Amino acid sequence: MPQTSRSPHAAADRLLPGLLLLLTVFGPISMDLYLPALPALTVELGAQTSIAQLTVTACLVGLAAGQLLAGPLSDRHGRRGILLIGVVAYIATSALCAMSPSIELLILARFVQGLAGGVGIVIAQAAGRDVYSGGELIRFYGRLTVAGGFAAIVGPLLGGLLDAVADWRGLFAVLSLIGAGILIVTLLIFRETLPAQLRTRGGFGQTLRDFRALLVDRVFLGAVLSQGFLYAAIFAYLAGATFVLQDVYGLSPLGYALAFGLNSAGFMVFGYLGGRLAERWSTPGTLTVGILVAGLGASGLLASGVSRMPLPFIIVSLFALVSGVAMSSAPATTLALAGYPRMAGTASSLLGIVRFGFGGVAAPLVGIAGATSTLPFGVVTAAAVLAGGAACLVLVRLPGRGAGERAGSAEPALSGTSSIPTQ
Image (cartoon, rainbow, N blue to C red):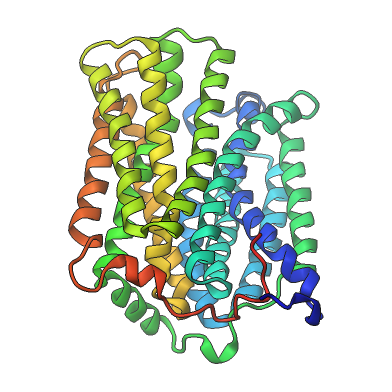
């Protein structure tokens, strides 16, 4: 039984899960919040549209690179210090974005803002591994998935509301204020979750050895690759769904917003169900079910590219694709991180950079045949899900000591699970 009343840090411990969820979304929400103001930004700074869009690309690249850097550093120096540096950098670069006099400086500032946002993602996943184990760990990663879906809904909506009352500089000022609020909460709540005696030792050479140890682990590699390919399908959806639904099927902006909201709700619900199912049934089994559901959706999109299908068929296919990927997220993250409590940051960084890296490669491919063809969208999503399924089949579902045993009987949480309630 938890005995939180005896701990002087009981109140902070109860709030820690909420903070970790917030850290997961505040970086990605930077991608969405200012998008409604992108046209105005382009005009004011006298930039070409293609150049202005690099502010989005720079943030995405930064989010991936920030995870790759912050993970190993947090394994070596602890989670709290690296997190505080990341949040302070986020505040400063958001303010710099708001004051940028040129598009070139804004692109650079957006890259550093992404770096700082990536710190929050990787620390949240690694700190979760520090304080949770077993079923609690799976449940926690399920909640991270739900938080990601919630951010996908709230980000564009909040950006649209703010755009009605503030210009693009004001939106970045709001992001800076949000960062300041997160800094205050972090200082009050986030205690170090990785004790000094359990941190990794050595410099860059040790980091390379840690990466090698992870990459030769077939279960880890299978979980990470399956997530990379599935998130490639998600990024393809984000890049291509607006063209498919509005340009090909003629949905109004409101109709598209409703379809997007439905899919985001599916992402949240099935992300939660994926965590619960993995905890109560089977971690690799739930990952497999998620891939199969996503595969059904991708097959529908591929079929619609070959022969035009009715709109309800497309809506259901998109919903299945997004929901299946969400269902796979918690079990795959658990499989990747459960066996590595002492280098959870490094493991989390690899998982994050593969997700964003594969997604960044896949997103531009959906428009290769123009805005009126759905075939590239179907081909990219189907190929990505098929590759994710192959990685799961070949690498994750191993004979002998199975991945399910690995997730269920992994080393206990480093800081103990009894002090951090999850309900």
